[in-house]
Image (cartoon, rainbow, N blue to C red; front, side, top):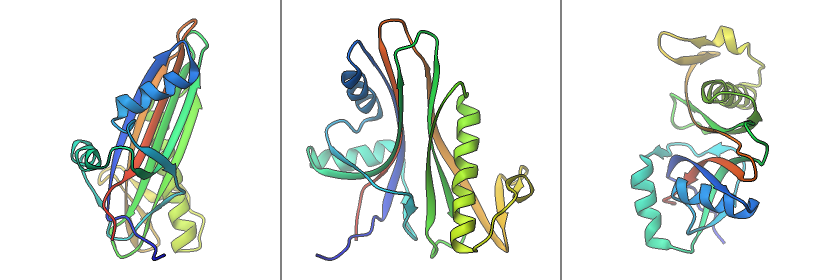
Length: 187
C-alpha cells in the first residue's frame, strides 16, 4: 500500500462536561467539530508543504466522510475535581523552508493558563524541530524574537503557533478539554 502524505491540516479545540467521563470526552469532540469521525492519533510530524487551513474549512471537507478514518495529533485531559484548572495544547513549529517538515507537540497540564500552555507547547515543538533538523539543543529564550514572533534556529527561521483550551472542573461532573491538529487532504 502506498503511503499517503497529508497536504492540509487545521487546529481545533473543545470542552465537554457530563457526569460520565466518556460522554464528557464525546462532548469535547463535538465542541471541536470532530466527533463524527474515527480518530487515529499519530505522532508529531507536520509534512513538508502542508497547508494550515481554517477550522471551518477543514470540518466542512471532513463532513463529506462521516464515519471515516481521520488522522490527528491530539492532546486531552479531564478532571472531576471542583475548581481544578485543566488545559490542553498543541504547538506547531513551521520552518520558513516549507520543503522541511515541521513538528507538532502535545501538552496537557493542571493549573496552567491557556497562554502558559500555548507558549510551552510552541517552545516544545521548536525544540523538537531543532534537535531533528539541526541536531542541536537550543536555548528557547535566546532563539525567540518577540518582535517578529519567530524563532531563529541556526540560520533558519521557524514560525510557531498553537491551539489551547482550558476549563475549570465542576463538582460531580467530568470536564474534558481537547486540542488537536487534524489532517484533511492527502496526496
